[in-house]
Length: 282
Ligand code: ARG
Image 1: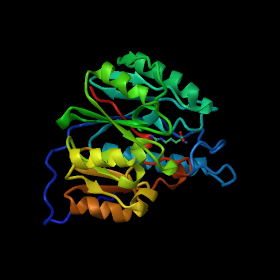
Image 2: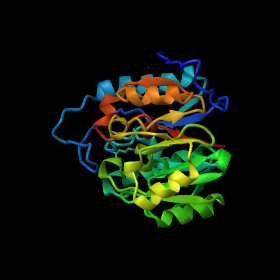
Image 3: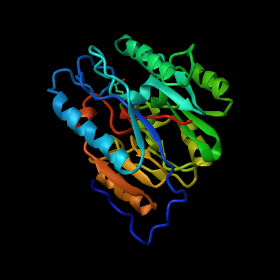
Image 4: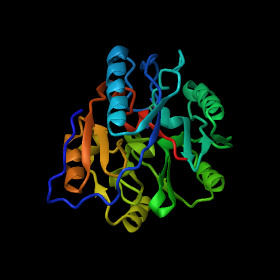
């Protein structure tokens, strides 16, 4: 595994990484058969075998960092099921179930519900449309849930999540169709700190982010377009799409170590590292 170290001059990341558990779904039936985001081009060729190879490298990167990878069985006819982050949002051992915006993906929610229920997680049935960890994330050090709306998740699901978890939810409005899920524009670096791409958010949401996270690492248009924000961090190591090498450098300068993984095939569906990874928080 290639691992890039931060320069010795950079401030060390505050937290040592605990062992994480990640739920992933092998892209065995991956394809771009419909277009529900601007990245998806149904006329462009997609190599499902290469997607599987790249996906295995992502799973291996997590294992090499000492994390646990658990798998949900892919289902034929559900080409987007590889983006397991969308299946639920899990905090404190409770999985708040997904309810997909587009009919093409709706059966994925049932597959995930079944997996969570049979794997010993509490399951909270959603009333409102929400796409799981695609539009929700959690900062344990601030006991704060961050949530996106504007393209997929219904803003009413934010209040629903606040009830399910008994934690405050910060609602953020997404305005750029290329960054249709929160996890394409913002991600936690550790328990308290985030990175984000300001232009993906409405003015009021940007102001809120500036006030809440004055120490955030800020991404530019190129960083975002390379899916640089769609990373997974354990507090020290940031697993990030290889294309976003410029943003990886910014993260190393901010004190993190970066692990680049090439997910070019999965980008054709409009996702990268984070979309392929659901964090299961006990
Ligand atoms: N093709 C999928 C969709 O548009 C990609 C989902 C990406 N997932 C994510 N967590 N951002 O729904």
